[in-house]
Picture 1 (cartoon, rainbow, N blue to C red):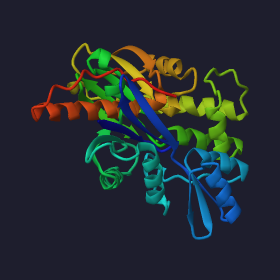
Picture 2 (picture 1 turned 90 degrees about the vertical axis):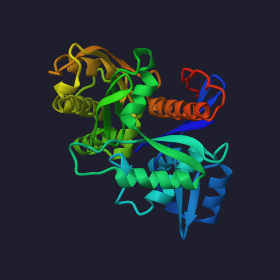
Picture 3 (picture 1 turned 120 degrees about the vertical axis):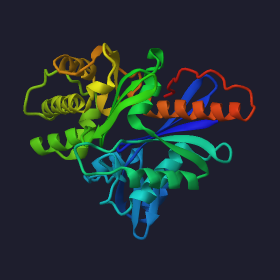
Picture 4 (picture 1 turned 45 degrees about the vertical axis):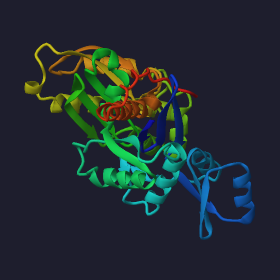
Length: 347
């Protein structure tokens, strides 16, 4: 048994194999602080709302945090910012530990193999991912797992491009960062991240329209479409503007980072986009239109979205974990690992 874990700024998801299906567990990576009272804590417990008490405060954690934030007109707080553990949030580590424990559960055996996503260092920011990666490794090890980081962009390749010999351009549009990986037969040719994602879109939209960030996030997640039919001036019109700007920025950095010497002449690859930020209808077509005008030193055979964008990174991490687990069993004289089942989501 092995597991995959997507540690995202907005959501944390795990994936595990059960028979022919991949089962996912998800929690929002956020929390909100409310005043403590005996009655409040009793009601939260009865309603099975994930929470913890500290002194005279109660922290509502995970999926319920956004609902409570909207009810009490508060902003949610995040254990992570810009794709890594937040240096500005004193409660970052205990909160992300609580959420991760809820998502991944206990190991099914001692030192169960677990691959967890980790972003590449961003090329447009002085941020470094080393502390984030090593802290998660230690936390997961303390939980009884044998953890291994996997580059987030590479996880997309494992999840979505098996039908193309793990060759292509995988882009994970997350909340805190956008991760990019170009791979050739499962070997990364280029991988990097940029410090812009869905949070940047939400923050810019909130600033432009005078709307609270959490309200913008709720609107974006509630049937928002990139159809550009919305009148300019509203939240959805502003979201469309900043989405388009984000795509141009990503393409600009891909063009800058690709080393022509590392790209095989005549290379023709598919592009797959995934991540929660890529979920709105119209995203795939808009990105394809902008890529068509870019000066990239390889051909693109097509652009497609992951069938389940939210689950793609966790699925790719699971593929990597099961593959390595199978290799270790074979090396130890066990029967060869079963052929990898196609990842499926379970709502």
